[in-house]
Image (cartoon, rainbow, N blue to C red):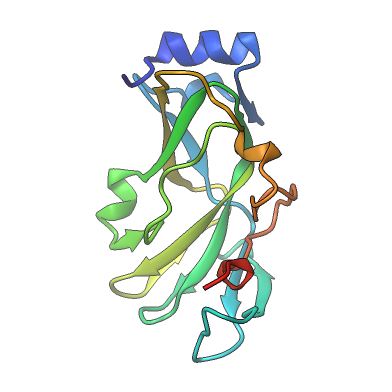
Length: 178
């Protein structure tokens, strides 16, 4: 079941959902709008290797915005830091963003109960498009969980994205054994 605006407000009041900074005007009927953070990143190498640590270079979006180009994976980040302790968060792109040909995630739209961080965005575009720091980029939708949680994401030894950071995080696939 998707949480309504009132249920999201109640969960925030109870400390089950944390959104920093929180702005009530960004709360929708059943979602919360998040904004694009100031930092973007691109991978340094033209060929990525799933078995090794692929390095990234970060840069900031200036006041004039930044033009994203097709054929490049940009790692972005939400301005908002979030925590979810009892609900499953999903991050989806806003329809206005999609209509500009911007995809904000390739595969990682679902978070885990216990995820506590800024969201890294896997941004790709269909044609060149200028983006701006603090522009609405996505919406968080929260689902109820049925049953008890044995291990929150934040306490899993295998969790690769627990270190709090306002910067985009590169793939940590290389930490898996395969």
